[in-house]
Image (tube, rainbow, N blue to C red):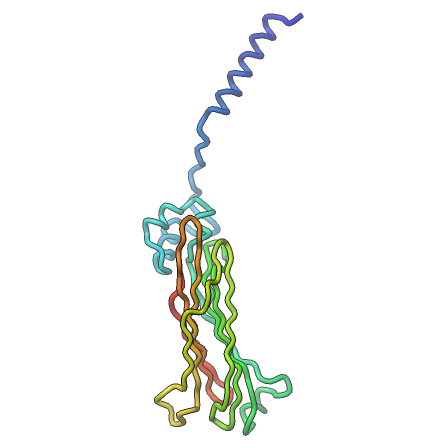
Length: 208
C-alpha cells in the first residue's frame, strides 16, 4: 500500500526534476582569464593579427570560437649543410650545396598552430654564386583550417648585390580556408632567400 506521504514526496521530486529539465542552460560567466590571457589582451592580440574587435569580443569565453582566432604569429628559419660538410668547411668550400628554410606559424590563445607555411630552398653554389636551386613547400593546419593550394610562386635573383647571382629568393603564397562557422580565406606568404655559400634571410606576411 502506498502512503499519502510517499505520494506527496514523489510528486515534489517529479516537479523539481521537471523544472530542472525545463530551465534554460545558461552558460557560466567567462572567467577573468583564460589560459593566462585576459579579455582585453585577447581582443588586442586578435585585432593585431587580423580579426576585428567585435568578433574577438563576441568570442571571449567560447573556447570553440576562441580556438579559431590567431593571437600570435612567428617567423623562424635555419640552414642545413649537406651531411658530409661541416659549417666551417662549407664556408670555405669552393663549391657545395645547402638547404635553407623559413617558416611562419599562426597560433591561437591555447598555443595550437592554426596555419603554417614552410618554404625550403635547396641550392648549390660555386664560390659566392648560386648555381641551382629547388624549392619545396610544406603547409600545415588544424582546428577547422585546411591548406587550399599555393596561389603565387616567384623565384628570382635579388638585385643590388655585387654579384647578380649571389643570392636567390623563393617566394610562395598559400591559401588557407576555414569553413567554421562560415567560409573564411586567409593568404600567407613566406620568402626564403639564400646567400652563397651559406647564408639565408626570411620574410613573411599575410595570415589570418
